[in-house]
Every structure is written in structure tokens, then in C-alpha cells.
Amino acid sequence: MQRSQWGSRLGFILASAGATVGLGSIWKFPYVTAMNGGGAFLAIFVLLTFTLGLTLLLAEFAIGRAARAGAVSAFKRLGSGAWPLTGYAGVLAGFLVLSFYSVVGGWTLGYLVRAADGRVMSNDAAALAALFGQYVGSPIEPLLTHAVFMALTLAVVIAGVKNGIERAGKVLMPALFVLMLVLIVRSLTLPGAAAGVAEFLAPDFSKVTPAMLVDALGLAFFSLSVGAGCMLAYGSYLGSEVKLAGSALWVASLTTLTSILAGLMIFPAVAAFGLDPAAGPGLTYMTMPVVFNHLPFGQLFALAFFALLLFAALTSSVSLLELIVVLPIDEWGVSRRKATLIAAALVFAAGVPASLSFGLLADYKLFGRNVFELMDYTASNILLPIGGIGTALFAGYKAWPAVSAELALRTHAARAMRLMCRYVAPALTALILFWNL
Image 1: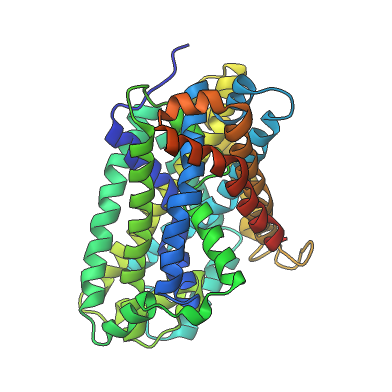
Image 2: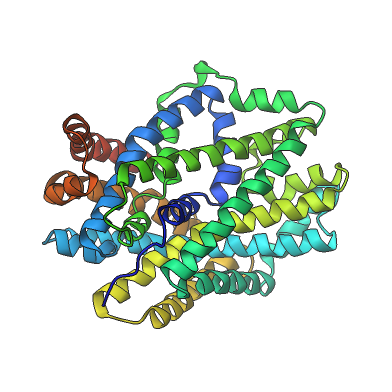
């Protein structure tokens, strides 16, 4: 069976950048940056993104294209022995992440509806917190929005690489940037916006600590969606004529740009109204509506904001579902339609207890965490770093001849890449793993 291919290099870059731009880019990156020294953290993050992050991104693209297969099958075709376990760890991580991520994606749908009917337009932070608590604690509505979000993801993936994922990327990514730019312009024209820009960008080198370096390392690693095998799967659909180094550089650049734009969108508005940038996810659902309520045409801006969040969530969820779907397609010859339907149903089912962990299952905890938190911790802090270490070592040792042939780098660049894969990337990723544990 002939493998699907991207229709164009632009489509591949936009789809890959979309995979890396998720909900975390909108609220997590600005918050972590501001709490860790602003411009000082930003400079370190960018440096690590274009060294460690880019190395792992290139490794995944090269392994995928060399093997013409997804995570598990690629490690089987280019390696042997225990190497496929790296692929299985990645697919399991992707499954767990998508299970709870789809729940949060559903929240963006729920709040898009609440922005449309005006329920989020309030100055009362306590009332907005109660609204959010009532919504996520409900046993019914979050499950419905989880199901709708999963159905949207399924619709894109079931249509295939070229007609589904690539076409969605070409629409959603430009729309995402347009919405961000509209909100940035409005945010920067608010009184007191300059203080927010300064808080985000002004360097505070006193906050450069080992803990801050690990935070920057982790954010750089996860911002490019490496470790699970999503980028490996996307690389497997890439034609041999496309230069991997240039494409990976574009993906890393677009991802970094989106994170910086998110900071310029969020922080001037937060500073203008004296709100708390450390609210984390609550900033999205409980704090930003206060900002919109103070703005002329605020409801339109609220609609734009939650539409932006939905687009960001979808571009990431599509890559995660594709990671899962490609396993039965490659390994057992299952049709894309059947594989997608089964995978989506299993992901939805696994997301049910994650959704209920804010309501009916709130009191059920293991190791001090509810189901949602446990899934997040297991995937993000254990499985993804293991996948990253395995991928780097595999590229640097076992599959280096195939990887180097795909990358077609000059001698010095190839040596640097191999050194990063063999020693630097595994060591730094192991640091993230042990620090988080």
C-alpha cells in the first residue's frame, strides 16, 4: 500500500507548527516566562529551542522519513531488540495526553458558547470562578463538549494526510495568527499596557537559577512536541525532495514566534487591569473575561479569543490522534477510517474519568493526584522524557547512517548533530526526568 504524502512543503510546515502550538502556548508560556525572569528566561528558552529542541525535531523527522512509518514501526524497521519500546512509550504518552487534552479542548468549546451568549461577560472574578467550577464540575456538559471536540479531531484525521490534516493546517494556522494579531493590537493599545510588555520581556537575571534552567529546558523540549513521535509520524509522509533542516527550522521559528505573540497578547491586558498573571489555566477561563468586559465590543473579542483557543487546541489534538492512528495502519494494515474511529472512541472513553475528576470523582485520588492530574503527570513527566531519550540515542547510535543520509548535513553540522543526539540531548532530557520525579 502506497504511503500518503503531504501535498506541499508549506502544508507540512503549517501542520507541524500547528502540532506544536497548543493551549499551553497561549497561557503557559507567558506565565512561566514572567515568573522566571522575563527576557532572561526568554533568551535561554530560545537558545535551548534552537539547540536541544531542534536536534530532537530533526531526529524525529529523519527517522520517520527514513522508515516511512510511524513511531513503533519506524523503530522496528531501522532497529531491533528493545528499540520499539521507545515508540510504544511515545504512543502511550500521546494517548494519555489526548485523553485529558480533549477534555480541556471541550472546555474551549463550552466557553465559546458562553462568550456567544454573554455569560462570561462579567467584572465579578468570584462569579466567573463559580461559573467555571460549576461547568467543569458538571457530570454532563463537559462530557458533551469533550465528545464534540473529539469528533472534530476525528473528522480531520479520518480525511487523511493531504485532504484532512494538511488542509486543516492551512486554514487553522493562518486564522490563529490573524486572531492573535487582532487581540495583540487591542491589548497593546490599553492604558498601562507598557508595564505588561516590560514584565514579559525585561530581563531579570537574578532569577536565573538551576530550577529556572530546568523549566526553560522542559518548556523548550515540550513546545516542539518531541518525545511522543508526533513529528516522527509527520516526517514519514514527507517526500524525499524536501530539505529537513530548513523545514525543521521553520517549524521551530513559527512555534517560538507564536509563544512570544501569546505573551504580547496576554500580559499587556493583564497588566492594564491589575490582574494576576500567575492564574495559570484560570487565566484563560476566569481572568481574561474580566478584560473583555472592560473593552468596547468586548464580547466580539471574547469570541475571537475562545475561537483562537479552539484552533490552537485542534491543531495539536490532530497530531496526537494521528500518532495513535498510524500504529494500527502500519502494524496491522487496518484502514484509516477504522483505525481513526476505534482510536477516537478509546481516547474519548479514557477522557471520561479525567473529565469527572473535577466533579463526581473529585475525591478519588492516587499518589495525591486526581485522575486528570495523574494522566498529565505520567505522560508529561515520565513517558515523554523517556521517549525523547530513546529517540535521541536511537538517532545517534543505531539509526545514524539512515538519519544522516536523510538530513544531508555538511560534515561539521553532522558531527554536531550526532554529538547532540548521543550525549547532550539524552543527558539534558534525563535531567528533566529526574528533576520532575
